[in-house]
Image 1: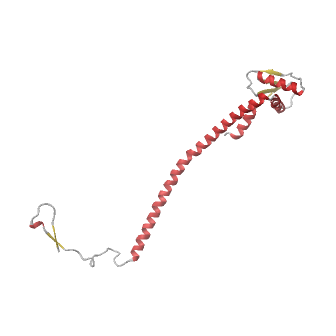
Image 2 (image 1 turned 135 degrees about the vertical axis):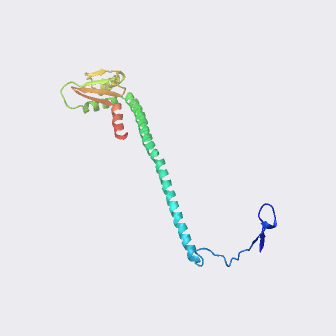
Image 3 (image 1 turned 60 degrees about the vertical axis):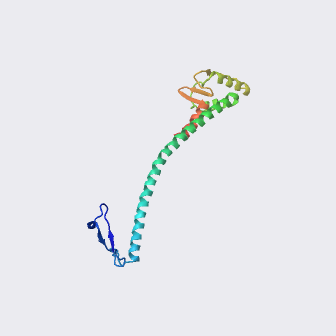
Length: 188
């Protein structure tokens, strides 16, 4: 037996008797006497609750990952298009440089544009940038062709390109046409 003192003033009336309980007599609740069966049930219940919590957490993480990857996919498409646009711009510069240094290559581009015209009556009119006109004239001299009829200088035609016309049909050829064809296939 112990005497328990309450906080505050200590008087004889504040002292109470307290009997220390015996652990042999203590009740353990509704599972008293169940032993390992109660423990196992509690353990399984705890595992099931933990699984439910982990599943809910995993779903939240999946939602966050989806939310984070959706913008990345959009950026990937935008970046891809920007890279392709840049690559085509570089290719255009390289092709224009190559064509400007090789009159024969420029003549091939013009010949392809003429061949793309539908068959119709009338003369073929080829409009070229004035600098490219000099290249084509040089290529005609180099190949032994002297027919410059229908070739006109037009500063509005970009370098490395041509506008070929026969009757109502018009074909834009040259470097710009090649780049536009490639771009239309690869850029959304």
